[in-house]
Image 1 (cartoon, helix red, strand yellow):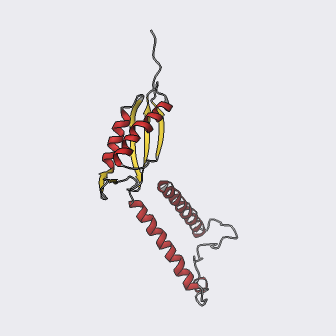
Image 2 (image 1 turned 180 degrees about the vertical axis):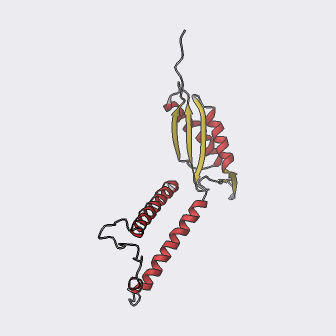
Image 3 (image 1 turned 60 degrees about the vertical axis):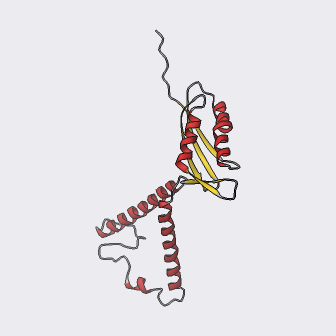
Length: 192
């Protein structure tokens, strides 16, 4: 989601800068801009003195300016912090039964799940990533299936074997999983 938001934000910012810069350049080089355009030639300024001081005497002006700038700063900080947030889960808390909790490294659990899934019948390769919270992880599993494999059997084996082992070993009630299946590309056999 963040990647899509970044692309849309950068695309909109680029479009606004391109259109605005092109329009100002067109007016600056006197290339004939429409009559409704605020800057009609090279002698015009972007903001006249009257425009810059129009709202200063109004009582709502400065609180509005400060509020808008504050919201922009908060949005920029949110965006900056979101860039450094890790998408993958670093660790999972495991209940030990004595009131304490142990910590299992996320990459280690991913590796074990990948090994369990890779040995299932019909699975050529598996990629597992943990997401969510430390106490309630979710998994995203990508399976590359052999040409002869049955997707239904592969999903059943994934849920009944590999994910069940992970769930019981971590002591979690459930591990919500998103599975994406893809078949291995294979070439037709030549008969001679």
